[in-house]
Length: 403
Image 1: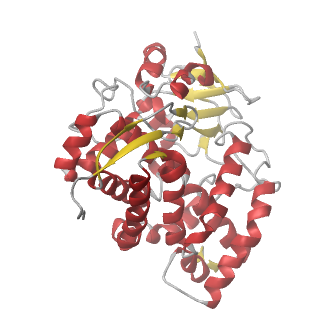
Image 2 (image 1 turned 30 degrees about the vertical axis):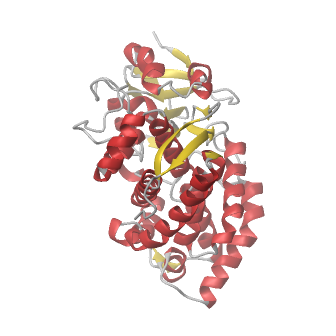
């Protein structure tokens, strides 16, 4: 018997309970089935969802049956390349993008990122009481993105407002597949992005936009329109996941003084803590695919033309894959997770996101003696798990000199 699940209702209690975790929310569902029908509030689609780790990775491996081209433009082409593209279109653009994202390349930004983090952490510590979401986790990744894109840091509100507009319209890409919902915000942001591209043409520098200008896809140079679209894709990809991951991790730390103290004493374990946070509090809980050919998945028959959610959040707390999945354990032997996707569409920017997270947590812990929740936390739980409001009380580190 096919199980039906209302994702929004089932996860809603996480929105107002900062101690609630996704493992408990998904536990009963995972015990019943690896694949279910899912009702998404605000969507007319009768979704399927791959919930278990095994079934989800099966979907992600099979682009021939499970297409990423879900959200399109009026001409039917993917709205965002390479995110919503399949091979061979995906392959050519991914080849162009790949050289910009290895750890040794994004690592060149570490000094600039740390400068941003130090300035922002010092400001919130000096204030003592802040909304961490509004004061730090929203602006910080976007300021870093401006550094990555080679645009003035003062432009970060432009990027931020664009990302929020897309999110509002799309319900994080789940509400209306094959729609043209991105058309208006893309049109509004395009003049700004074109100006950025023109500045790069006139003042070349060694950054990702310059690689779009000088690079080729399948033996041809890119048009300004394609460069604008790729830049917009970077703006979207570089913000939401890192913002959510940072806030989710800090919320965990704010509720766990012992973990804070341990990481202050052992800062080399901060990456282990961020990886466990990414697993247990997966930022992008779910994304969509379109079934192209009749197939069977987890004992369910899925017809061509139907839509399937790849539910990373449930897969990352699947007890068949992770022992005691609801326990936040930085000593967990298995550090793997699906928060950055898997296979062809594994997140290009994951090394930059990890660098952002590590530096921010390092500086926050080094410059405080403690921090704690100081009011009502407001989250949203699905299809993105993130923190909208997080009032914190921050106490400065005793030492006047902090690295």
